[in-house]
Each structure stands twice: as C-alpha cells, then as structure tokens.
Length: 335
Ligand code: SAH
Ligand code: SF4
Ligand code: F3S
Image 1 (cartoon, helix red, strand yellow):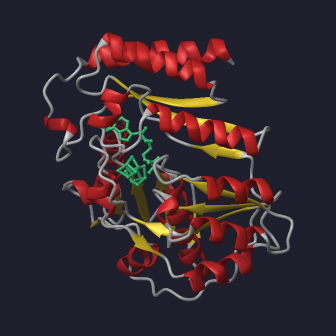
Image 2: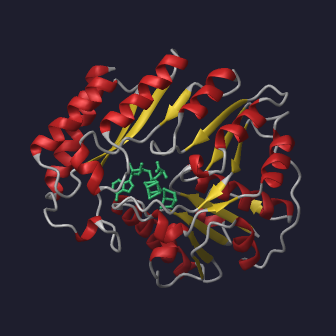
C-alpha cells in the first residue's frame, strides 16, 4: 500500500513518524507525498495550542473530501489530538504516540528494524509528563512520566552513533531521567563523530551537575533550550513552573560561566491569565536582561481541562497577540 504521513508538533512526534515510516517501508509499503496517490493518510497530531488543533482539523477535512471520491482511502489520526477529542468520519483514531501500536492497527505486523543510518537520529529517553504546568495539555494526552530502560537507550545509541552526525535525546522533560548528568556523560563519552543534543529541559530540574557534564564533553552541543515561559514571578507561580526569575537567571549565569560560547534559546507565553500590562513589562525586562540567542513566542492558548483555563482574569485574545507580536519585535531588534 502507499502511505502519506502528515506530521505536526514536537520532535517526539518527528521521531514517532519516522519509526512508523520505517516499519511500513520494511514491510514493503511505499511512502508517498501526494495525497491523491495514497491508500492511507496518517495524521500524527499535536494539540498544544488551538492554532495547531484547527490547522490539523482543516487538513483532516480535506482528506475526508478526497475520501468521498476515493472510498478505499483510509484516514488514520494518531497522537495527541486524537487523545484529546473525538474526530468523526475517520477510519482509525488512536490516542497513542507508540509507533508499534499504530503500525499494528494498520494491519501490518511489526518487526525489529535495521539500524538508522541517517544523519540525524532521535532517541526517546522519557515518555509523558507529570509536571502539570497549569496551561499545558501534554500531561493529559501523553500520560504519566515513564522512564525508558537504560539498556534500550544504550543499545539504540550504539546502533546510531557511527552514522549519525546529530543525536537527539528526547523527552518532555529530559531532566526527569534519573541521574540525567550521568546518562549524558556516559553517552557523550562513547567514540564516534556525533554531536549530542537533548530536548526539552525544565529549568526546575536543570542543574549544575548537567552543566558541568556539558562543559566537560565537547561532543555535547553548546545549544541549550531552556523554556522560561514568563519573566514575571507572579505569572510563573500561576503557571506552576516551580522556579523564580532569580533562580532561572542564576542557572543562566552558571551555564555561561562554565560554557562561555553557549547558545541559549527559550519559549515565552504571552497573555497568560492574570498577566497585567505591568507583568508583561516585567517579562520584557527579564528577556532583555538575559539576552537569549532566540525565543519562540506564543500567545496563550486555552486548553480545556487545564487549571489555567478556569482562572479568572483571562486576557482578551487580541491583547495576547499584541503582546506576542511586541515581544517578537523586541527580540528581533536585540539580535
Ligand atoms: N515539554 C516541553 C514542551 C512543551 S510544549 C517543555 O516543557 O519545554 C512547547 C511549548 O509550547 C512550551 O514550552 C510552551 O511555551 C508552549 N505552550 C504549551 N502550552 C501552551 C498553551 N496552552 N498556550 C500557549 N503556548 C503553550
Ligand atoms: Fe507541559 Fe510543563 Fe510538561 Fe512541558 S513540563 S510538557 S510545559 S506540563
Ligand atoms: Fe504537541 Fe503532543 Fe508534542 S501536544 S507538542 S505533539 S507532546
């Protein structure tokens, strides 16, 4: 059969989509990019913000139109959005991020795969998240934190390390891996011509021990993504982030003292419930002080079921966008 995979969301989804494609390909099926040629279209979805959700729903609607002309076309919707809600008129709706389960649901038996030989390799180290940042849907759709067994991580690493130039360790919060610094040192100390990356870190768990390992191992990338979310303590508390601006800044100072050439990126949410103009100004001042190399800036998006969705003082949608646009502009001028 011919299959199309449409992928949305984070790096963890990129990894799942690759695994599905590899499983189907070894079983003799063919990946294509043209929907009109497909026997099955697989949507690997995201629901972190409403914009993502609406975009995916509109793409699914197009696939449904195509199915009216081609009744044998199968539509499969997997991943976070299908864990969050029902979607009518599709053949498979599976709220999982487990590639094996998806492939089997398509009626294809799974098998051990030959090693990845691509330039970039992804290795999951944790699944799920139980931090429950008050705005975030991920803990609801990805489930409790699960730690991947060391033996699996280690074996997969050894399979890819001689081919891949870039190896990414993935988790919603990689610092939740028990003794993450030790894992990093263990893997970065192996031979091979790779650069080791990891995504994402949570500032509350990102510690000096991790920073020391990065500094000590030249094979670990000097790019650190450390999502700040807000530069205002009142908002950080409401977000349930469990660190203060001062604590965050101390970690940045520590990073820069051990690794002077470090490249630091972040995520910021604008217009979180209760964020006044003054709170936003505080965030702007914090961002200007820290001098990030880049920031991904999002207007706050209500996700039903989360604590933040039920807070009073919701900031008007228009104002969230105005603030986000303003911060993007400030970042642009700084760089
Ligand atoms: N586990 C990762 C990624 C979470 S999703 C982490 O904690 O860093 C990626 C980014 O999306 C988050 O860092 C946050 O900035 C943003 N995000 C998550 N939920 C959001 C929401 N409801 N509205 C707007 N942005 C959101
Ligand atoms: Fe969401 Fe927070 Fe978990 Fe990241 S750490 S996935 S923002 S709940
Ligand atoms: Fe999106 Fe799910 Fe990743 S909601 S950001 S695809 S964990």
